[in-house]
Structure formats: C-alpha cells, structure tokens
Image 1 (cartoon, rainbow, N blue to C red):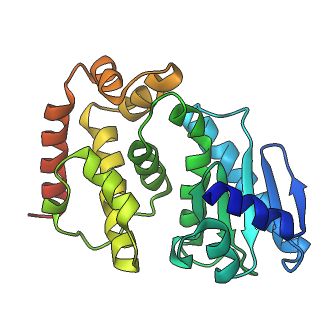
Image 2 (image 1 turned 135 degrees about the vertical axis):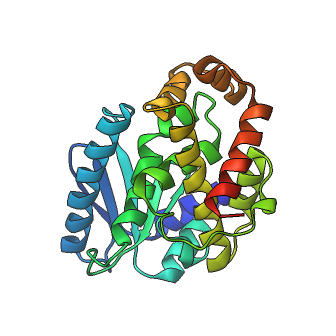
Length: 237
C-alpha cells in the first residue's frame, strides 16, 4: 500500500530530471533547475569519492528525489522532515536547499550517498544497521555528538530497532552516535582495512554471522561483547 501511494504521488507531481555519470536528480517543478544541478554536482563528486574508497558500487547509479518542502518530503517518505536526507527504497530523498554549503550539511549528504553506494551488498545479506553504520562513520556525521546511555544497545539488533523507532531529534542524534561508533569499532578492532574486508564478504550472498566468521574468525556474540565495551570506553563510562 505504501509503495502504491508513493507511485500515485509521483504520478500526480510533474518532475524534471538532470543526470551525471552516477547520479540522477529528480525535482518537482517548484524546485529550480539550478538547485538540482548544484546537488547533482556535489553528489556526483561524493559518489565517486566513496565508491572508490570502499571499492563498491563504482558502476552504480544514485537516484535522488528533491522535495520542495517538509510537506512534500513527508508525503513521499512518510517520515518527519528532521530525517532529510533520507535513504528509502532505493532513492535518496532530500528537502531542497538554496544553499547546500552550510556547515555540516555535507556530512548529512555524504551519509545518504554512501548508503546508495553500499546498496549492492544490501541485496546480498548485509544488514541495514551495518550499511547505515558504515555510512555514518565514513561521513563523520557522528563526530561531536553527546554520548547517549550505552545500556540502550547491547546487541547489534538493537541498532535496527532504534532505526525503526527514532522519532525525534534526540532519537536521531543518539542513533547517529551509536551507528558511527559501531563503524569506528569495526574499522579499528581488527586493524587497517578490516571494515572493508567485512563489507567485501557481501560480494557474495551470505549472512552477517558468516561474513564475520570469514572476515575476522570470531563469532557474533564475542564481537557484540567487544563492541559494547568499546561503546562504554568511548563514552567514558
């Protein structure tokens, strides 16, 4: 039903598009074409940077839907505007801004782009929380956030649950902190290149448990215990 409603909304709203090598930006008529081109240029550069860095999705394409305002965004995504930019169902939804150079905005955009870059491994079994963790870690969007209580996350599946339940700016800030430090933990635990090694396990269809065992020769329960201790240390608890 949700996908049908989204389709009907798109059909009822005339859109124009502009494309580069890896990015296609769709805009409603009430978003200026020059703004769409600005986004296309910035997102194209990000896509090339992160797909080369992670060595995933280099031949892929990022689909972007610009929204005129928070009402347009919520109508298309079913989410509050505080979550823009939002990656959903293969599309990056963004409330269009006249000036996209404001401090910190590049990190928000980068998080969305990286989720698009990593989409191929999602199809092969990479859990959504892992993809989101890598995106937040690589973009740096989690840096400088206030540490939330670490007892709220004991298992990796807790991250998935918090992704589904976040409904406020505080929830979002806490989630970004958990996710970014999860990516940092995975990158630091087993040395340089360890995070990429785990991601590349998903070139083939596999489970998270299988990928962890193959990449790190450790079970998920032990990895979770080490991860939780890492969060405790990062928060100074």
